[in-house]
Length: 434
Image (cartoon, rainbow, N blue to C red):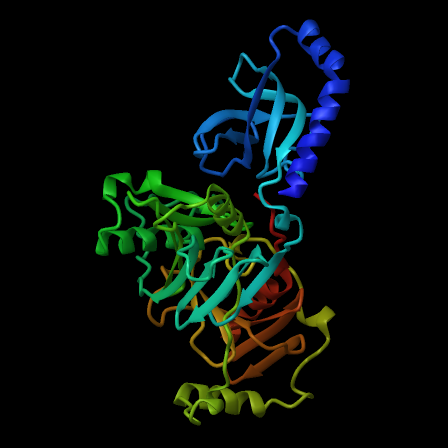
């Protein structure tokens, strides 16, 4: 309180000495006006122009605002009570701030807290949260609790749950296909990760009566640095839910307001956390560490790997990986941020890895990928392996490490050239901030 009184006293002195200059502002520009309120940042869902919003003590909007000369996101202004001077833009109705004074520091502790990273490879994601929030983990539920001076008081929460949800990718069927002329390119539909996520969310929403089907497309959003497809719903109790699909799992990210008095700033923090949400690789445990169980397929793969000597693993990369992109097209993994080429008249599909040490598996075939008809498999491995190639019977395998991740590409030896081209083409994709 002493700090607030000091600020108010200082403000009174400044206004007393600066009354002439303040009056001159209005004399030079009669349309100038002044407002008081709390500055909050706009969220991705706001329909207002401008960059911030001025709200009153009840959280109601006073006016959308912007400034080209003042950093409204500065910690000394954001989420504090201020008085602003400026004029309203006639084109979009946004109040353009030319002067600002702090009337009250709402939460001076905000200046001390940090926006820190939370990472969980069991859940398979990471995000950022403020260090003054409490984190609780219980089974498949992760809860972030807003700070409070009273531990027994009901507070705003951000809850993340991970639930199994199996969704089978529908094969892409081409109808009324006309045989192309010789030499003409054949356009083949590709099932990418974003399409799979959208269809899986639609199926999940229908099965759980989350949202009417006619409103589904309007409820879709893109969140996080990777702009992942998410389904947004809002309840009458001000609860907000975002649903994401990822390889056999539904993630629900919810803002659960306190029943007593939800805080506007905490809803903004929820949106900040959403903007930082990214999927990661899952924790992969050695089968031998889990009761010693090992499937026949894993045992056979392990035996084949152990039987490969270093002499058989060709490490001459310049000879092994010869890029030939003729007749190839590219695909991108939005989950693991890489791209690679594959035959342009083929199909592909991606699923969560089920074998030991495999984070994710992509199958490629000249027909819609389903069952056992894949011709080439690409595995993203949890452990590194030296670059090179091996041949075991009729099976050809290439290993390629890019940006710290190892990729294993396997297929019949007749596809050796395709496999080596795919391996050499793997390129990391840098995330762009939204």
